[in-house]
Structure formats: C-alpha cells, structure tokens
Length: 127
Image (cartoon, rainbow, N blue to C red; front, top):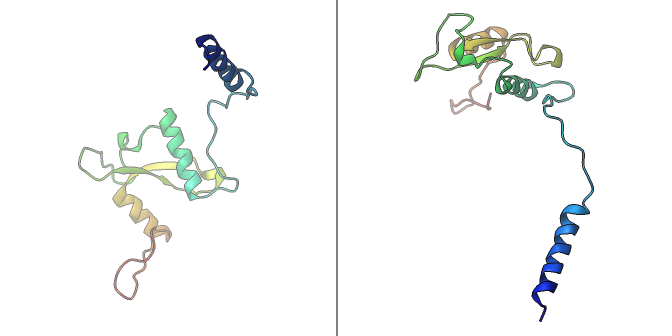
C-alpha cells in the first residue's frame, strides 16, 4: 500500500503531465467574421446576427419598418433584416429593417418567397 507521500507525489506527477507538459496553443482571435467562402443565405444571416450581437447593428425590433413604418411592441409581428441586394459576400451587410408582412411582400415581388403546394394541398419545402 502506498504511503500518503507517495500518493501525493503520483498526483503531482499526473497534474504536471496534464497541464505543464501540454503543448502551448496560441489564443484564438477575439472575433472572427462567420462567413462561408462564396457567400450564401445562412452565412449572410450569421454575419448580421454576429453584428447585432456585438452591438454594431441595432436589433431590428428597435427600428421602425422601412416600408410601412410599423413600430414593434410585445405580442405583435416581429421585425427582421431584409438582405436587399442578395446574400453574396459583397452585399451581405446591405440590409433594411422590415416587419414580417413587408418582408414577405418584398420576397413575393422579388420572386424569392414563392411557396408551392403539393397534390394534397399542403405547402412543399421549408422556405
């Protein structure tokens, strides 16, 4: 049976191996732009969300709708940013705050919010 001194020595050796002999890794950068290499919808949304989280862009519900002027309040339709020039990397930050009704209207006018129904009458797809 090991004495208390031997147990302490083994514990100290395990601690040293785990923490002191580990290779040093450089600290990660404080903030990195979340963006995929060619640009896509998910990356554009992540980039805007990141800017809002950092406080570089105001939350869309704090701004009036750019089309109808609707002001957000608890329990009403939400406000979101519309990527007015598309989702490409160059245009990902060109956004306007709009309410959901105006956002869907804009999408229908652009042809991006078209929902198709299946033979059973239900909508097909997720977007």
